[in-house]
Length: 257
Image (cartoon, rainbow, N blue to C red; front, side, top):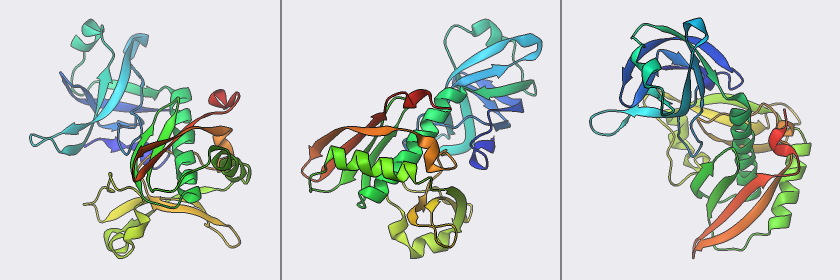
């Protein structure tokens, strides 16, 4: 099992860890700050720092799979090509410092939070999602047209309002009793531990407007103001019952701290 430190604190940039296993797929650690591809969000990249100042470049992070192809509770840190000599020297039990590419991760956090704001502005089920450092998209299950300028203006208002974001959890039974909390038609929240991680934007205290509340395992910023300027770059009719909304960065927003 890989202890996923990013679930509790998305702002952790590094951690000390031990190597559990090295195979053709990559490197499994006992704990990590690297988010694995899932829920539409891209996997993290970064480095594993070794003794003596050497570093293994990690190009991607994925969930390990069992013999039936089902995800396990281990995460695979996928090395970039051309590092065979460094990888050959690794051994189980060896110490490393796992360090993510923070600038890239922060863009993913900001975009992922922005997609939750989109779910507030377009309150219909989602049947597709992709979150990358350069763009994000949501496919909404709907037939009505959407207006690019209106959505961009709505996002700007929600960002400027500086709504706080809270990470919480509900029980499987509570989720079963409130199926409408699951906005995605294509990705179901992970079950099996008895609780499901949730993201709440706004509505956490008295007088705070409720913006969004749904199960989500991704990484997010702590306040909508941190998202910066995002704009709707494109709206596409993907099918008779699907409208795709694509988000991009506004001027200078991609490099915001």
